[in-house]
Image (tube, rainbow, N blue to C red):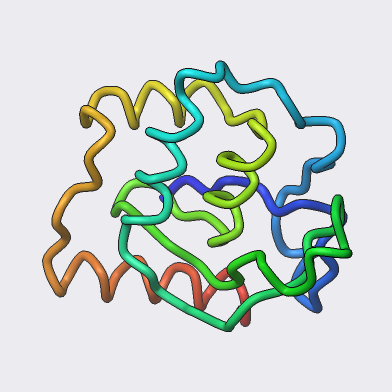
Amino acid sequence: MRLLPAFSEIKTADLGKFDQVSLSDGVDHLEPSLREQISRYLMESVSLISAGNTTDPLAPEKGPVVPFGFSTDGSWAWPAYWSYFVREYGMALPEEFISHVRSLNFTPPKLSSEQVERASSEIQEALYG
């Protein structure tokens, strides 16, 4: 399974276990016409772990508005906050991920219970070893 990176500005105990990118460096790098479609795809995919909300490091005055957890489409997995940052800031995504989402017509696939279990195990392994 491929993983979207974590943002270095969002501090978590497991941050060092994932590739990291700077949130501030990726703002406004996504084609505006893709923001809503990809954000919806990210948000509507299967939630593996949901841990509430955290503060937006680019706008702390908004309070805890950023979803925290992990999601998957069975091929890729990502921190749940990606949907927020894509929608709000046009956060840059790897071209391979954009191509993948386009190939699915911006519609998350329905996953079997076995696929969800496998993805969950892979995320648990990445988080906790």
